[in-house]
Length: 541
Ligand code: PEP
Ligand code: MG
Image (cartoon, rainbow, N blue to C red):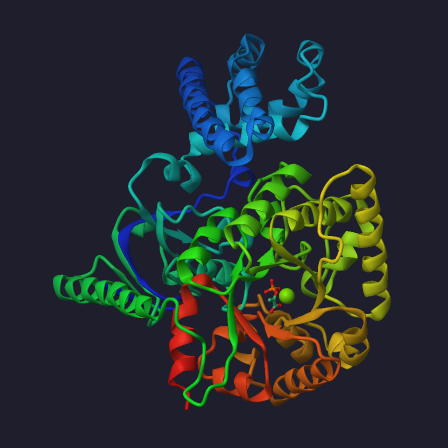
């Protein structure tokens, strides 16, 4: 048995076989092949598998996002089954004598410029979909973990580093847990693991070897330990720990329907954070008072290189709004940038992404994206109790500009006779020191506030929250931060507006009493942290 120690980022125990993540298209090598026939057969098999996957996706999408949005998967099947597509790839393999992965990758642009292909209209507005087909084929050929998610037994995923755009796509029914060599506790990968409730230990270092592929592994997300090929007694002990975790969760279930009130009668709301359609169901199960933070950016990170349409985004928001009934759903305008890079939106290369082109800055420069976001949020407001939250605020001017744009979108919807809530509440995130200093002025401009302690820590202490090396300096309890939280809360309350904490500190049970004392109105945490937080509140004198 080998024992490794890392950083725990998401609680729980996972036991299963280890599978290393093969990062998609970037790793493709150009390999000369002797047996071209065999290579063509590999292509045929991958193609058949891709078609059957697309059929599954089509059926699933019809149910979830409607026929119009599902049509894309039908068109991808059509391309894969097109004889011209088939002949082109097969003849390229024959001529070039190269591996099919490489040919598929290289042939995307050739195909898009091909006259026959163009006549069929596949190139117009569907470049991304053609590239998506190539990615799917290559994944199947290289048997990456996404392919495994379609067919194999559940497994524990291992990687050098997992980026948020990888993590957002993890299927919880297939990925039991994950371990990585690098990564930081406060990164969005960690946030996603907690939101999805996937046990995870990161930062194990180079001792996490590729040779462990296929071996039995235990991920202990409570202690930050990992056991490879565990001995009998460890396996028994960890199975008990896993079951105890389930038992503990069941015990907490008794708190469902109960108030978030201390022994002396002080109340605080508990809401949940989400990032994808799947998380919505977890909120319902968690008994949270609503959704306190919908991280919209994750909707752009789970579609690979295909930009989701306004309608697709709207459908997810609508589902959230309808599922929560009268309970509030706070939808944050996508905070793209930093470590939340979506493959489908090019933000260009940046020297310092953590303090770079992100948040509202991106929305102002990519106005079409901003307008789509606002339209989708406003449309969803007709289906429930939706509020709109603006990320990474640094000035009053930004808020005024955003509000002007919201008014413009409202006018457009009105003239198109599309229903929406004309008095939708507008709130801002407090996650920059500038927003803290301006909180009094901001409180006269907007309806509610949410403190993002993750970015506020990063920007106040001047360190990248995603940096493995700087983890030891990341101190969310720093007196400067606690003072900032207090100042903002007072300023906002002076104007009679409510304030929540939605960063990771909200779930830190050592902080609960403090938040109640200073008058925070709401804490928003990962769905599976809601009941533990309720228990903590109810235990406070
Ligand atoms: C935060 O910064 O604390 C926050 C809630 O936003 P995110 O973690 O998505 O950056
Ligand atoms: Mg933030």
